[in-house]
Length: 171
View: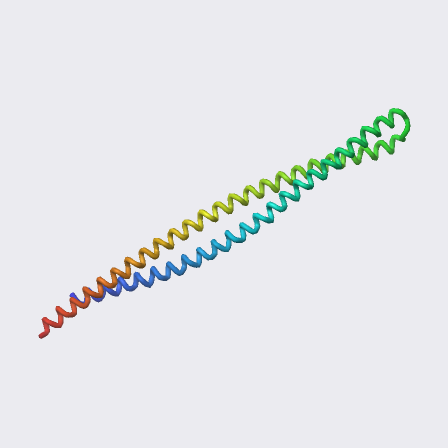
């Protein structure tokens, strides 16, 4: 039974090596996830800045549109009175239409930036959850390693006892 005890001990020692390798791999995964989270958090700041810039752009485009609208109303009135020629009115109307389009585009770009930011928040949350799961798995592996080491000590004791019994039977 000494050989059997030795074989069982060897298997237990191999389990320790396998578990240690799994722990190292898990630690690498955690580092990768932590880096990904750090990058995602930095990207979040950039995306927030983009949203803020888009909001400011909407405000600016709205002001330009209001001014163009005032000028268009004034030009309509002046055209009816015959003070300005039709081509001058057409240029002012074109400026108004351009300002209106720019405002609509700015609002849409702001909306897209906000959607992108919200999507990024979801990515951050998923990364945090994934990181938490990886850390939980690491703790589980470390607990398994501890149990495996305890099993090796027990198996070593059994092997020593089997060796002693074997040596007593030879005498």
